[in-house]
Length: 201
Image (cartoon, rainbow, N blue to C red; front, side):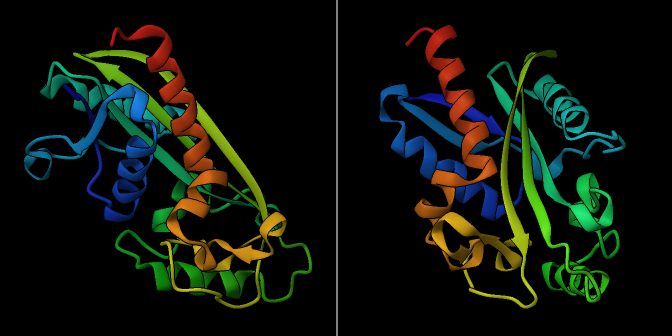
């Protein structure tokens, strides 16, 4: 019998990655699903100044709607030449309802004259249950910002994020290739290890 772990986001790209990872961690007998009725639950404010603050707050908020374990993530891109921006504002870099294309375009314009292209993706997962925050997990992957989009896979800033060890952008990697090295994959692997050590099978 599979255990249910509820994910508190409607982002289809992230949910695909998490579901794939759960299938690969067969020993956990885990099924990751969106929190029931998520679309009808008013979202919490994301006014934290760090990924940890936002991920923990979201997990804690959504945990009041179920007795099962829930997790929420806050993730984004930190660009050295922009002093760590867009950071926690990555999804709304170009505005509150910005598209991936708009965010990528703004990033390229901001870096047009910069030779410092260093950047990193950061992901923090917050885990909570029944109104109690349990723990958080952090993953980081280093890379560089390209001068133009490369690849049509992934989402967000993936086509601009060059990962040197594979000589590809994240937008050029298959889902399993990306998840094996990504910030989100690292954070979820740490969460899975926590479940192996603390949650009875």
